[in-house]
Image (cartoon, rainbow, N blue to C red; front, side, top):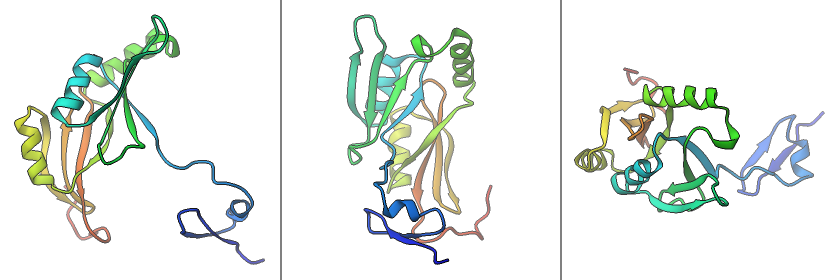
Length: 174
């Protein structure tokens, strides 16, 4: 039985036994749009992400009277993706779960993701001068050069300049 090959909307050829349905229907997931970063104080987080990291403020509003605050930020060159800076708790979470998340945040146990740069050394110096707390200076990795910083709540981020080309599997993983 032949394996179907389908061209995606982006023009990539995809093949395999699970692709037969792709030629018949629309691909539903287009990409990541919103990612939640749990924070301990939204005002402090807004200041950190906008003033220190230089992200754009996208939304700052209260949903309904007495509702939750919807606070989003994003990179200027990536208009379709936002980070929502959320307080644990509210209507969608019980008190025990909210307390557990707050504890993990304050212990620095939550990694929120990877933020990309094309000038790791220069941007590292700028962010450090703005008061961003780095847990690791830029270091060479198989995938590029990475520094690690912590936000004002305790979440850590990888700050990475990707390596051009394939992974360098000979590079030490320290």
